[in-house]
Length: 194
Image (tube, rainbow, N blue to C red):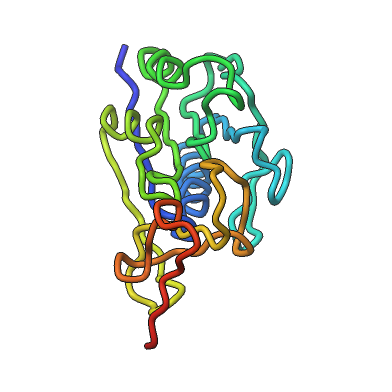
C-alpha cells in the first residue's frame, strides 16, 4: 500500500489559503472522480458553520470538527482548512498523529492555515505539519499599508489573545516594513508617512 502525500498551504491572513484548499479539493474531486472529505474546525464560524468559505464568499460544504471523524475506506483525500485552530481546547486529540494515521492508510492530506500568529510567532501545529510535508505552498498577501508583498498578519487592536477570530475588522496583512508586534511595545503604534 502506498503512503499518502501531505501538502501544507500556509501564509498570513488574506493570502488566499482557503481559496487554495477549495481549489485543490474541487480539482481532486473533478480530476480523479475520487471521494474526499473537506474539514474545518467547528470553532471557526466566521462565514459559515458547515462550509469552508473564502473572504470573497466562495464556499464548499465541509464537516465542522472537534476531533478527527471516522474516514471511510473509499475516501482518497482529506482537506483541512484553518488547521492552526485544530489544537486544544478546540480540537480533542492530536491532529499530527491523526494525519500520520491517514497517510499510513494511503490517504492524501492537504491542510491550509496560518503559519504565524499576529506576534510573528509560528503556530506549532502548522510548523510541525510543514516539517512532515511532501510539498509546501507559502502564500503572500498584499500589505494593507503599501501594497508590497505581505508575509505577516497584523492585529489592529492590541490584546493578549493569540487566537482571536476576526476578519478585516481585526486583522490586515503587512509587509516587514509596516508590521510590528505591538504586544512588546504597549501603547505604541507604528506611524509612517508614505
